[in-house]
Length: 374
Image (cartoon, helix red, strand yellow):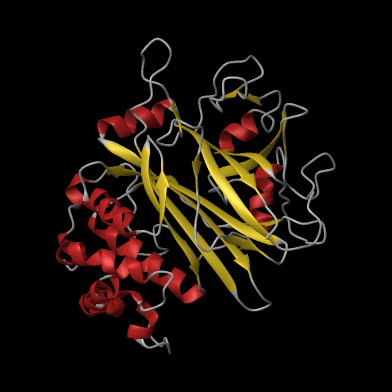
């Protein structure tokens, strides 16, 4: 049944390959779409073909937020799945006072939470007291679990006015040989207006729980994220997407056929596992085509960042298993890189509080990242 549907989808998806496959690509279009790791995405496009086939000029741009819309018809794609940030440029965000004038190289920083010392550590490799890899040389899988997402008060008010959800992506790329790499893309549509505090008021923090009310939304995939060469490149993006838009239909359709659904009471999502480089370009193009039809509002828009995971690997940034926060770079700079901050583990809310034990007013994502032996 799936094979028949897929063949039909491949025929219907020819329109998209003319748009999305780079010119000069030597791979046959049908062969390109027929890769098992992402062919389901082509099948998912069939119900949306009429809307995606419309010209960009006819997109509903009048409904987008004019304060910070993403015009993905020019310059980089909206999701920048193929972009890797210059680690030297990003490093300035991790050194107090080092950032110069002009746009930041990334809207956020990564910080590791040491549960024993109850403090955040800087992952910059040159930091004497920063994160050091704890894993010996070997092959591992990466197992991330989303625990909480906090939206800054000003952004929460803005997105509520726009009737927008948060489109949150967590993506990982790792080399499998000297010349080849694979990517895993996980996308979530998060309803940041469901959460209430203990007094019934709107809460800025969305806690991820599964349908069994257990903590966390695991980003499972088959095949699993493979870290075979000691390094991994991470990318987290966040956008505002209108609740009543083509993006909603896109998530509904793809989540139904995805082999790696993401289960959470506050979100709907899916994973696209094991993508070769050409497939990442294809998926990036698909997402960009949808973004042209249904504009996104940027919250976090940036490329990936490479980390050394094992002791023998070398990178500008280090990673070890445990809790990781992805948090607004400006806030990290203002707080002396989260000095005196902590994560609520007692009540398992995974809320970040400042040195005065007050909730942080910043955009942040808390993810538990483990590296089981492959």
